[in-house]
Image (cartoon, rainbow over all chains, first blue to last red; front, side, top):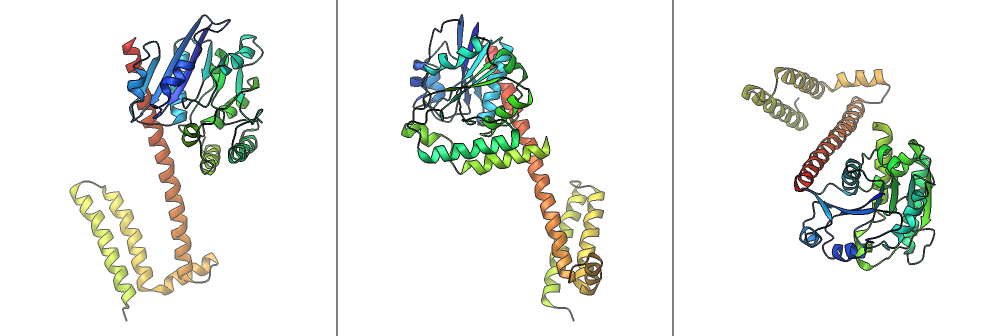
Length: 228
Length: 112
């Protein structure tokens, strides 16, 4: 079993080393763990920080193309290199690396195709405005794509080889999270939610999605509806 | 009598038309473009010179005055243009992403 842990990173120089150090190097049932960082056109010291980790595969976008574009590059790379499971993790340190083992379990047991690490099953530590913003996007995702999740915007997810093969990402920016949910629905994939811990530091809150971005994401969903 | 608004309109029409004419002369635009723009500016010129003609069109459309009809069409054209521009922009963005990704993956493969 080959596990790929993919982290899309844009200007995460301050924290990326800490995040990478925290990632598991051994997991039961996994023979090989390959960490892949998609450096999405960072203009800070992200790339030089990454050079300190020779085992980490770094794929660098020359210019910033957004979360969706970076995730898709990670998907393509994992597909090409025979990943059995792909895990996506945010590079801003908001996820607990111990949750990776938790979220791949249902796939290892062949019980599901996609696992979403839900920060909202256990809301502890999440600011109230984040809860409202997430609920709004969950609702919009449900209305447009017909799949209900408690955390449509979660960055920590696991995909089986089957899911990896059929999920087709087209969005370049933040709306990718809702698009993945849409793909799960369209391709009739089995999905499981596992509660995960969210670590809300000032850093991750500043880097994360803003509530004002919600309207932009919803607009993009409508636009996709008309132009696809 | 020719009013100030008419003079400004004509000057603007002449300026806009001359821009496209110059581009055609330089070979940067096609004759077809000059023809279509000439028709647009001619219609605008006639509408400015004889405002009564637009009133007839307005009656045909069922809107009050000729000016309203002009605004109606202008908004329609603007909306459509914005849609087209947004659509093209999305396409260009997609192309840039594709290029960026291809280069990144090639570079990554080279290192292996």
